[in-house]
Length: 162
Image 1 (tube, rainbow, N blue to C red):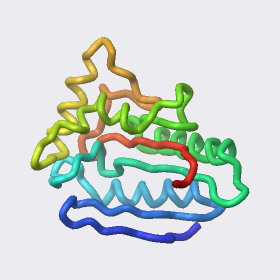
Image 2 (cartoon, rainbow, N blue to C red; image 1 turned 180 degrees about the vertical axis):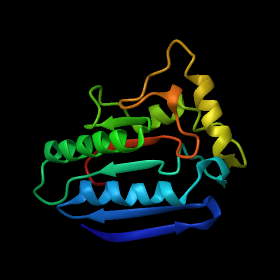
Image 3 (cartoon, rainbow, N blue to C red; image 1 turned 45 degrees about the horizontal axis):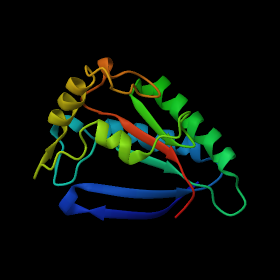
Image 4 (cartoon, rainbow, N blue to C red; image 1 turned 90 degrees about the horizontal axis):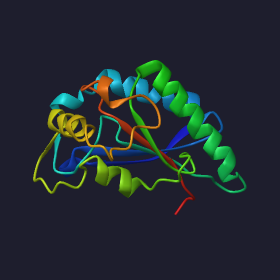
């Protein structure tokens, strides 16, 4: 696989990457593992909300690739990340058994709290306190109780390319 595009957004203190390829799971796990070694979510500050050092990963089919195949790749990625890093992962779209939507997961986790500055350690504390609510939805992989504050959590989804 290869990096097809990256977008650096300095005002939000975030970067988006777009990868394409046939060996995407192994390469993406390696990329995320390097990011976890380089980034510490406890000291993150930005003007845009985020739930972790690696906030969001979306898998989308290209050309004739089926969304079902892409779903198996996303699930393989989640299993690998959970096994290696024990990070809570929330799945949405075709990666989720209930077809959750990303916006609903983010809303439940306090993503839209209208702050002017988002600090990683405060975000993790908010998520941990919200997890005691009886309606709180548990992550698809991992658990909130053992969240590593230096990593936060990840949202992983499978949706058609828009």
